[in-house]
Image (cartoon, rainbow, N blue to C red; front, side, top):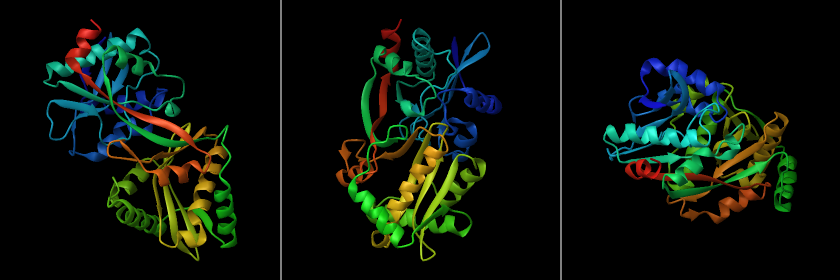
Amino acid sequence: MRARFFEAADAERWDDFCARSYCATFLHTRRFLSYHGERFVDRSLILEDQGDWVGLLPVAQRQGEPSIVGSHPGITFGGFVHKGKLRGGEMMDAFREVAALLQTAGYSILHYKALPYIYQLVPAQDDLYALFRCGANLWRRDLSSCVDLAHRLPPNPRRRRALKAADKASVTVTVGQGRRVRELWRVVEDNLERRHELAPTHSFDEICLLAERFPNNIRFMVALAADEVVAGVVLFLMPRVAHAQYIGSSDRVREVHALDRLLESVIVQAAEEGRRFFDFGNSNENQGRYLNPGLIRFKNEFGSGGVTYDFFELDLRRCLNAIE
């Protein structure tokens, strides 16, 4: 087994490999990663065994820190992509080859965002064991709220009352198209600015570009009251998971409880489409060290439980010494 850096000519084969992997999402594809353009220094890796591709690792050089490379900052989670060839000892071999190549290229640290188990089509946490064996440190952990659609916890009575109020106010939920997408995005931007003094990770043009590239994976859903968008959610759809990438609501939402009707509708829709999980995303700030109590309580009242998003820091020299 040997590791080498990704080249532009590998893009089509990379995406084909992702499509056949049981631990990849559309976020891992070059079609998704390439929308960032030259914003990041891509240092993605390919693992080969006698000419056969056995694994991929989407990574980029950390901005402002030329000695650090990490899971691509343009995606929520990273990790090794493979089709079953990197299990047990082979995964430790993969880390060794990656560490050797990166160290030769002048890097000293690898930041690794593990893929949460809910996104795997079959169990594939061999990387977590290999990280332990390599002496990696868990430097960040976010807590996401996830609904197990096959075994959903009972929604809180407060949420059930809100749904009745939304129905009484004639709130409707529909797929956002055309001008509704622009209206939804204004709600998302205003919501993030008002509550967190933040802006969306993606611009409006970027999210529209991605939706054009991935029409089966990105969906805009809006809640309407008197023909006005009062709440919206941008869903990233994977085979087993519907992930709420953005959730936004206007000042009017509490009057008509539109967010409750919207979220309940997309949760039910995810189950009807055969997905196993609905992932609200994390409720953290300050690199996972602050948990917003009101936000996670709201999400949990829909019948969700906790799933961690784990971030590891791996000293490349230590890794090579640990698994020689």
